[in-house]
Structures are given as structure tokens and as C-alpha cells.
Amino acid sequence: MLLVDTHTHIDDAGFDADRAEVVARARAAGVTRQLVAGIDAAGWPGLRTTCASHPGLFPAYGLHPLFLAKHRPEHLDELREWIRRERPLAVGECGLDYYVDGLDRKQQADYFEAQLAIAADTGLPVIVHARRAVEEVILTLRRFDGLRGVVHSFSGSRQQAEQLWERGFLLGIGGPVTYARAKRLRRLVAEMPIEWLLLETDSPDQPDCRRQGQRNEPAHLTAVLEAIAELRDEPPEAIAAATTANAERLFNLPGA
Image 1 (cartoon, rainbow, N blue to C red):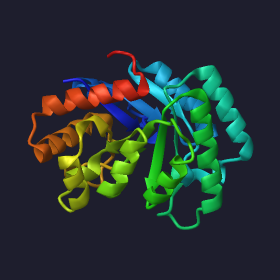
Image 2: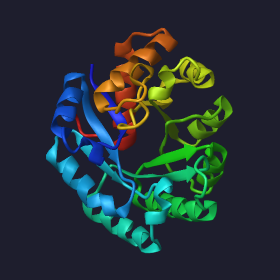
Image 3: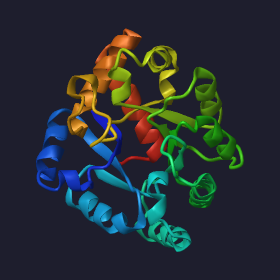
């Protein structure tokens, strides 16, 4: 089986000591390619270096809402230049986070909308963060016709999922689906059309239920795959083939 981890942060300092081994374990587990999402302008050079150093890693560049204090308006101009020069596979991670207190919502919206405009201008898909803000994200996306992308770590309702599908957005599903308490998410994943499904780890965050409290890594994508296959009562091989094809289509991924 060939798998694609569509959302990782393997450039994170938590992987500095053993990044090569982490990548090797991923490849041994069948995770042949990974999208590595950017979070702030200061991290883009290191992200570029990490992806250039390991086959199968592909960068996306963006300004994450959780790191609002690090962002400056001029970083949006820099982002345009990075994307023009580096030709990444996606814009992001960007979006809205209404879970963490103290994050200015107006500033979040300004950075999010500016990055959506960049994605629209460049024709790239966008990787969207939407925590406690799915409805607001959908309302924002409605102002940008023709965009495509993924709402990663999706946690909304079936109705919200359908609105995203109508706009050409896929759902990124990771470790949370392995927890029995995630009843609404598990029901959605069991029933949704598979052409809108992507697998992710969000490593080093969001470990599966068997590794709660531990550092997550791309090799653990197989736990997400197994949980989804069980929920849908389908062979893991079928889920792997479909979600890999979805990732290749959305991100125009090079072959494994």
C-alpha cells in the first residue's frame, strides 16, 4: 500500500535529533510522500531545506493563525515571492482558530483572506486550519470562487462537510478519528463519499488513541488508515488507494 500523509510538520524542532529515522520509518510503513505545512515566515527557509534533504517531502508555505504574534503584513508580500520562486504544491497552513484565547479575530481574518487571494492568484490548493471556526471558514471561502484545498483535522458537522465538498474542498482526517469518544467525526467518516477524504497525521501533534501523549510521526498514519477502514467496513488497501489518488489529484503530487 502507498500512503500520503497530507499534513505534517516534520520540520519541527522536535524532529531535529532523529528526522532521518522518522522519514525512514514512514517509508517502511508505506507512507511514501508527505506534505509539510509552513507556519510562519521565519520557518520557511528551514522548511525548504528539510524538504530538499529528504525525497518524498513537499513543502507548503503559509502563515498559521496560532502564530499571529510572529506575523507582519510584509510577510504576505514575502509569501507571494516565496511561492513565485519556490513553486510549492500548496499555500498554507492558514485559517482561523477560535479555540485559543487572545488571538485577534480580525487579524486572523485579514491574514487568512490575503492567503486565500494568493492561492486564487497562483492556482494552488490551500491547506486550511479551522478550529472552533468551521462556519466562519466556510463563509470566508464563499468569497473566493474556484479555490480548492483541504480543511485539515476536520471537526465540523455533516452539513458543514457537504458545504465544503460543494466548494471543492476535501477533509483531512487524522488521529482524532481513532478515539471512540469522537462519535460525530467517526460517523461522518464512516458515511462520507471517499473522494473527499484525505489522510494526515499533523505530526508531531494529534497522536492516535494508542499513543496518547506521545510524539506523533508520519509512520503512524497506518493507525488512522486502520480506524477508517474499520469504520467503513472496507479493506485498508481500498482506503489507501482512494485517499492516495485524492492527494495526487488535489496537490498534483509527483509519483512515489
